[in-house]
Image (cartoon, rainbow over all chains, first blue to last red; front, top):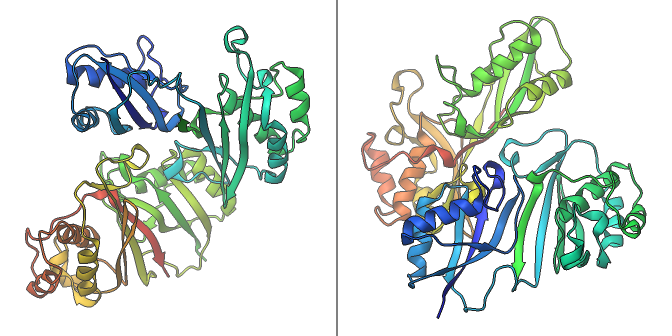
Length: 246
Length: 246
């Protein structure tokens, strides 16, 4: 029987080259594997629900791993947090069924893209907001977002989509724009996301908000099926992996 | 006629040796003076409402300075923010009456001391909260706080009080403990504060919250008029200069 564990991880991605292990780079996955190895005295592979890019954050990334011998979850959690830098924290950790898989068992994800829309970026949120000085037309952004909701081919809103393996059709169940004072939040919830899809959606919505593009352009871009310079990739520091659904 | 300016500054103090200029240290005041000098091409002294210690933050510190020739406030503000690191921001800047003085004109201040009370410190607030793992008895802290409100001699809640010049009596108009989930906030509002007074009040309240001291101890400590080891100085990273009243 496998000793499978599931954990929920929160991290500020500013200082890391993204989730995935890469040679000669400090990544979230490599930090988690490093401390786990220190605790259990053997190499353990950690499987995330998916990658996050350099500079992207997670409120609640989910991962699983297997241990040769079972250990007390609370001790593992405490031990990992004691060894990790303070910008990564294991928030929950527990035993999981042997067939639980952080990526394959996931049925949906929620991302949030946070924007500070005002003349001055407050120092306390400098690493966790995209800063937009110019007044954004939130109503236009909301109209554009409604065109993007639903089960559609999002090839035009992805970078290098891997068409062969999983196709480019995804069900974007929710794409909403919330506003509270100078803080804007784009909430994207769906059954799956293509590579750089949320940052592409955010980049497009920001162009609409600035008045560069009309909300209806969303349909034309979707129909084109081709990624062009019309859709920019919004910067990473505003993006959070918010929740993984199982 | 003096060309006097008033500015409101927000900063995360983590990377600084406090507000006040010191040789061979990076401080908030020295950074502000450095960028102002670059903009106006001459040395300008900046006067704050008071010092903040190493690692302490400000939501709204206030300072004034004089220029030999008047400059457009919006340009100064934009220029300073363009030259400052992102952890210091001039939030407002404008002309002030010649007799306005950031320290001497102040009639009161509000400080807030923020605590994360839970088993894990979330990564996004790691630099701006004091972390307390053990469950705190908030009702006991509130009882103790009520003993400390009013016009009293706070010598026992200060480090090295300068008794001769300004005495040690202050009017602490409000000392309240707010709780929202795992977040605790000690709000201290008064006509003035002694050196390290807020961190001493917070250090004492945390001891009460942990059950080390009873709320009534507050009166005995006040009456003693002497600082002892009974009152620890709480760490700096939870403290914010929140507002200066004029």
